[in-house]
Image 1 (cartoon, rainbow, N blue to C red):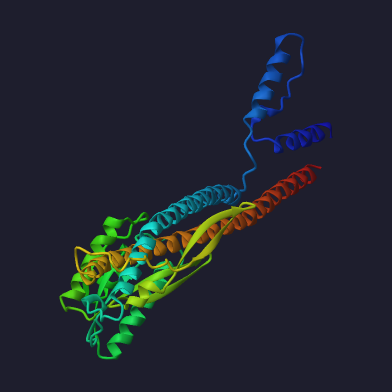
Image 2: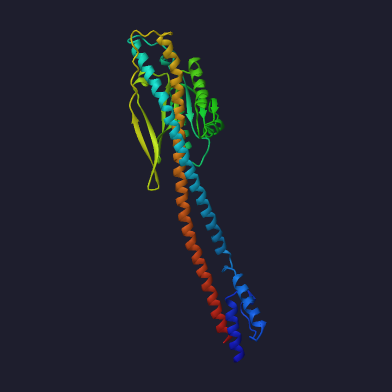
Length: 369
């Protein structure tokens, strides 16, 4: 009977450790043997492993929790990077405002100086539309929600609408995503351009020259620009506007608006400011122009088109970055919720493992009695 009680106690002690040296059955003696046993017991305690479920479920869940948390760190970092790029796009728009205002003011003054004279310029001449060129602005990268897909659907719908009216259509594509999509499906493409995260005047000039040459050479009767209008950090609207031909009133009577990214209580927001139309510059009646005012107006119009192309690309890039911010924020929130659910599942698995081991110990002890 004493032997059975001793065996039961020994089995109970061994069940709580994965190292055989954690408990000792040697009797303490005087000298270094006691110290050796204490040191061995401490080392065994430090090297004990966590509870492992036989099917490996707890370890798999723990690894997945680590992966989800690391992914959340990445998505949060991508959100902050996108926010910094939105600020840079905002500064670029503000930097172009003085030139745009001056151009609008000079153009308005020249139109007033011409008075009732008919302005007969190629870019202002409306003609019968038999062929239209669509300039579509998309992004070069993904991970920005539905930004690219919305713009592509808008371009497809406009393409089919014009074709149903018997109008020929070709496309100038700005951005890798749109180029890859329409090239795979055999759409008539005139030329493609990349759309970086920091558009500049040089890139806009190459695009505007291609569009103007297409219109002035008579290869196309109208140029339509499809871009994403920036509304807020959580909303943007695919828009269509006729780039050329246009009327003088489009320049002299249309105002502008700028946006500014701000942060309050740790949350990002956008403030929009409506800008009035620039006042026409006053040219005295006795001012003598070296060139005819009509020729000056004709030379200003390409600059206006170039500025409009640059502005729309900047607005599209801002919309893309805002969409990426929201997409990364949603991914971070989902990763946080998933990590919480996995933690609960992991704790339940550990509790189930401990309960199972206790039941086995009790059953073993009962079997020895």
